[in-house]
Image 1 (spheres, rainbow, N blue to C red):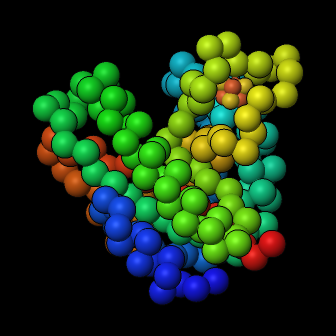
Image 2 (cartoon, helix red, strand yellow):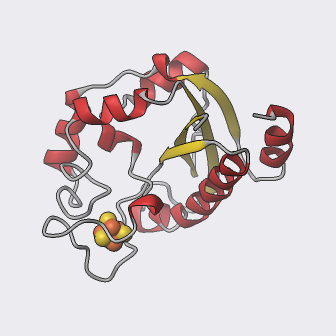
Length: 178
Ligand code: SF4
């Protein structure tokens, strides 16, 4: 991997902060999955959400097949951060940046697996749970769906979550040599 070329590409994107990390830094917890199960209306609705993504143990094993990852954050200003509709409307811009960062990794010939902030809405009617996903290579499941404790990781790395009326979006792009 030509890291200098990759970083030159990343510098062109409106990324707030990024770090290359060892996946050994990640903490996985059933407690995070419990929050998906009990508090998220998307639970069980798409292949990008639990339980479609597999058990926490399966998600952990999938992530740890990749020794390294690119963690990145973006920020979006909103009028009222407590307004979920307004906050979620900024997610598309973040996902577009994640797709561009993923393309940069793939252009380096790397095998990637991205976790972001999606409960997939690509198809008008999701096949979940009756038939396989139509576009599995395009899924960017949300980080929490895999049981990853984001706050723990942010604290370890000194990642800043901006306060006030700024939403900080967070993604992890796993990569490895094929
Ligand atoms: S791509 Fe389509 S089938 Fe796959 S999770 Fe998304 S909505 Fe469902």
